Length: 172
Image 1 (cartoon, rainbow, N blue to C red):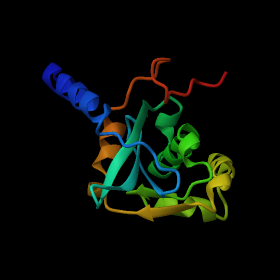
Image 2 (cartoon, rainbow, N blue to C red):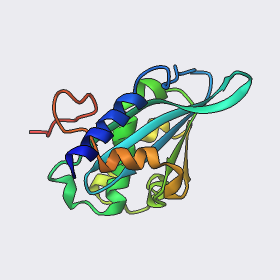
Image 3 (cartoon, helix red, strand yellow):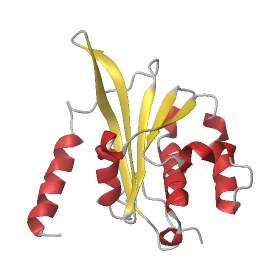
């Protein structure tokens, strides 16, 4: 990637994550959680439809991303997308706990995670991790061009460092 492209992406990220473009969450309204995983990272965008100037407007609440870890690079596409959901729920728990929300993904396997009959060890652990959200969460499959925000975050994630609040250190 060229220096110009990196600078352009960093400028865009700065503009998209500063007020007034970010909405304040209204915990009485449902949220939309866009998720995506790529070979480079995980990305999620939390949105909400709010009434602004007498019109319904969908706007972002926050964006998160991180690079994939070496062990995760061996996961298949289904596992990566499910990992992304679990990671996003963990990181955005303070927004989503007890609230109604819709998860929007471009990968159909995420919808089947909740009902998988013979999951492998990771999938079983992830099924258990998302149980608390089951009553409030709806998983919806939509074409990838619907949520380019999460797609962009997963393809150009923030680096894994202590400066990234979405980073999860390796377990020892």
